[in-house]
Every structure is written in C-alpha cells, then in structure tokens.
Length: 120
Image 1: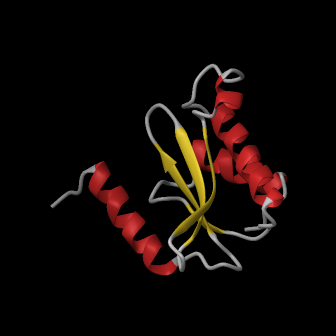
Image 2: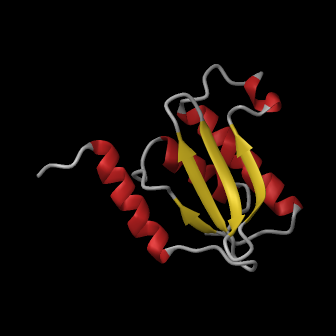
C-alpha cells in the first residue's frame, strides 16, 4: 500500500517527535510550513509553553516580503526567531522540522537562524 504525501509527512513527524523534545535548558524550535506562509516557534515541552514565535505574517516582515511562501521569507523568519530567542536568553535549541524534508524553505530558515546566533 502506497502512502500519500500527507501520510508520509505525518509518519515522519511522529517519528521525529518521538525522539525530539524541548526542555527549559534546550527548547524545541518547531517549524510549520503551509502553502502560503511559514511559522516558527520555540517551545518548552515540559511546561507546554511557547516561549517565542515568528511567522511570515508578522507586520514588520509582511511589508518587506513579496510572498510568504519562498526562501526569502523563510530566511527573514529564521533571523527574526533567532533575534527574539537571543533577547529572551535562549541560545541552544533542538530543531524540529515538523516532518518536512530538510530542503528549500525549511533549510533556508534553519541556516538563517544558525547565522543569527542560535545553536543547533
């Protein structure tokens, strides 16, 4: 039986979440990619609390971006999430790609966050 793309993604995501968990010392950087936008959250899984969030829907980014669904938007969101995390004193995170392949927009966001100072 062949799995659909969505089923494959969900299966990968469950497998990743079985191994990756955020702690207060090293929270989880979770990425969600939709067709139109990209979202990033830094989450403490022990307290079930979102510490920092950023997306391509942010008013400060929306004016700069032509589209929320390209690598340029992902790069800007990566820089923004890193900046906000560093302001809160978060330097180390665990990367959760959300079942998406590490390619394109996901890779652009991760590399931008690393360049801006996040360690993962």
